[in-house]
Length: 190
Image 1 (cartoon, one colour):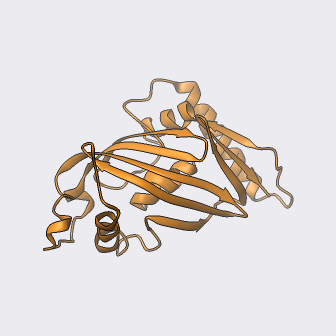
Image 2 (image 1 turned 45 degrees about the vertical axis):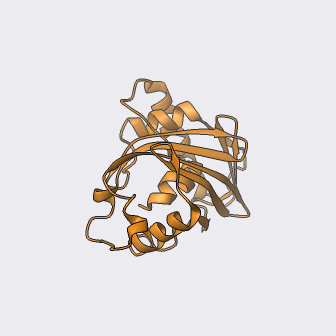
């Protein structure tokens, strides 16, 4: 699974989480909606009724361990407001980068365990998802975009081609649009 896509783009499409699952109805509701989207995708003429995922459902789903996160990513939690997704997590960069190293001193900040917050604009239209990372902070300090881009190119893209600070990707399951709202994600299939 792709780190930035998990952190940002897949947050657009059903990612978020924290702690232990405490709200079983949210998990089962999320599972029902995901099952409907999957089965609807195989229909000759999919039902285009919007599916609305709440932030609580998504967070409970991931907290329950229903989605595998990349090695080194823990305590993932998402919040959304119109067009913006914010992901807060703890990242063990040494685990995330296993098997890769760099002598570049600019990348030395990406080692050890840190609290990371990623804010991004995200939406889906015409069967494609779009994510533009606005900012990344490490223990409360904003990472310059050029350093973030260097990290993505050196450590993430070799492992996860297609990941970028700005990404465009095909939406799964015949999803045509995805709209990030205030504590919601609304998807429409065609």
